[in-house]
Image 1 (cartoon, rainbow, N blue to C red):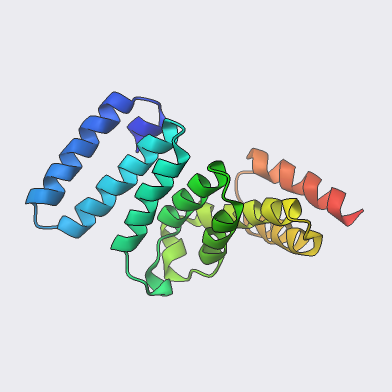
Image 2: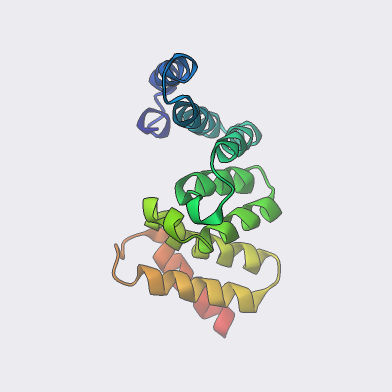
Length: 166
């Protein structure tokens, strides 16, 4: 993922090929396939092929249990962001709402959990649902109050909340 996020897609592809080999030959096939699909999704995301990225992330979700207590905020967030970039606001909203309902699954990515409220606030605002947007921004800021204040989402959420409350 670091290779993909840093734009080194050649190395990311090499890592993906190795994960695929392990998924095909190894003992932990399901887990390796999940990581392979997630990395391929990240590669497609960095290539700005958001529909392709969402397709890979959907396949990742198929490898996870359907039990909402065991879902992964990390992968749900990746899927939601791909949907958002692909212009599918409804599906992005659905995934961010799933993140907010997680229990154990949010433990693997608390940042995605908190920021899902920020993203929902923006989606609700775009959809003309100011009350829901206000609620989401407030929840995000409440969750983020003791975290890194330098994140751009914090200032943006404050500004958006202020504008909505006027």
